[in-house]
Amino acid sequence: MRIGVDLGGTKIEIIALGDDGATALRRRVETPVADYAGTVRTIAELVQSVQSQISTSATVGIATPGALSPQSGLLRNSNSVVLNGKPLDQDITSALGQPVRLENDANCLAISEAADGAGAGSRVVFGAILGTGVGGGMVVDGKILTGLNRIGGEWGHNPLPWATDSEHPGHKCYCGKCGCIETFLSGAGLTREHFSRSQKEFPAERIAAAEQAGEPHAVRALATYKNRLARSLAAVVNILDPDVIVLGGGISNIDMLYSGLPELIGEHVFSDGIRTRVVRAAHGDSSGVRGAAWLWPIKT
Ligand SMILES: [Zn+2]
Image 1 (cartoon, rainbow, N blue to C red):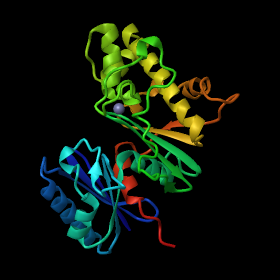
Image 2 (tube, rainbow, N blue to C red):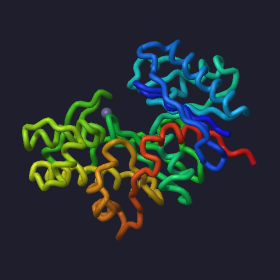
Image 3 (cartoon, rainbow, N blue to C red):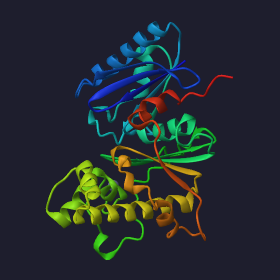
C-alpha cells in the first residue's frame, strides 16, 4: 500500500493506492491557511487515520508547490508562502514517526503519468503543468530526474524561445526576470494575450469556449498560445528528447492545443522530423496526489 498527500493552497488531499495503482481510499480536507504547525499536524493526523483505516502500514509521499533546497533542506519557491523556509519533510517525518518523501507538483505529475497514466510504458517522460504556474518534471526509467540542484525540469522560468520583437523583453515575472515561459503559458498569460486583442479579461475556460464558437480574438489568442507552447516544448525536445510529453494543469483541458502540436514543435527542433507524442494527463487533477503515492518504489 502507498499513501500520497497533495498539499495545496486551499485543500489537502490524501489517497491510498494498492501496488496495482487501484484507489483504496481518498479524502480531502481544507488546508489550515497561513498556519504551518497546523498544516503539519493536519497531514500527520490524516495519514495516521488512513493507515488505521486500511489496517496496514504504507509508504508516504507528499506533493507540494516548491522544492526543498539542497543547501539548506528548507522549502523554497512555494506559492503557499507559509511553507517557505521550513523543513517540511523533516517536520512531517517527526510528527508521523516514519520517513516521508516530498516532491513538487510537476515532478509528481510526471511520475504519476509515467507509472500508470498517459506516459505508461515510455522510458523518458516530460510532464508539463500549464495552470496558475508553469512547471515541468522529468521521469527516466521510472525515476524522477530531480537533478543536483533539485530544479531538473523547471522549464517555466527559462525565457520564451525564438521570441519575436513584440515578445521581447516580455513581461516581468515574479521570479525577478522578464519574459519567462510562465508569463506566456500560465492562465494569466493566456488571459493577457486575449485581453491585448479584445480588451476583455476572460479566464482560460471562457477563452476556450469563445474559440470553439469561432470568436476571432479568441481564435487568434489561442493560436498564438499554441505557437508559444510549441516553441517552449521544442527547447525541451532539443535537450531531453522525451518519448512522450504529458500536459497537466487547467489549460491542458483545452482540446485545440493538441491538434498539430507535434508538427509545430517539429518546426523548431534540430531534426528532420519528430515522433514525440504530446498527450493530456490521464489522471487530471489527481496527478499530484497519485504522483506523491508513487514517490516510493514498489518493494520487490
Ligand atoms: Zn520567472
